[in-house]
Length: 187
Image (cartoon, rainbow, N blue to C red):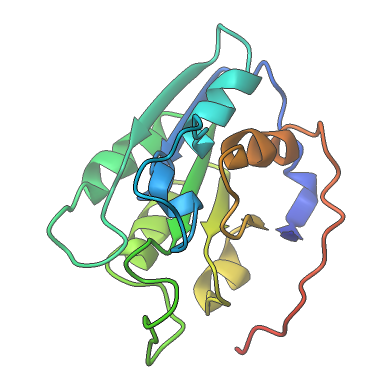
């Protein structure tokens, strides 16, 4: 679901010179699948990072940093993400939930992003590089700051095995995101 696209930032050009792909869900296969999955997954899972690599020109420079974890603050690569974003033509930040935060028996007291994720996107945005947020989640998330400041936001939900290719199709204009929200997200 395309939640926001200010000034027609999307679709991106496939021959863009450089992309910073940032975030705990950018290359996290298992987080795209939700919580009802088998222990042995027999199919290849295409992450958002892989989907972007599959879509762009071979000359496009793609750099990736995780930045932080979905929960906790053990991993803090926010300064590294800031440098990557500052030196890129576009920054794509992939945030949201993980298998440990979404699903049956994983109720929460707040719909806000967990861990350092909001700090991560703020630092990336403040570099001045055009920023896109992709959410991978199974429930509504309260993204007040992102909704106000980030020019493009996509909600990919738990996008499944080919989710990375699907997100890339939307980012680069091969698919017109006509989906609508089935819910109201509280402010």
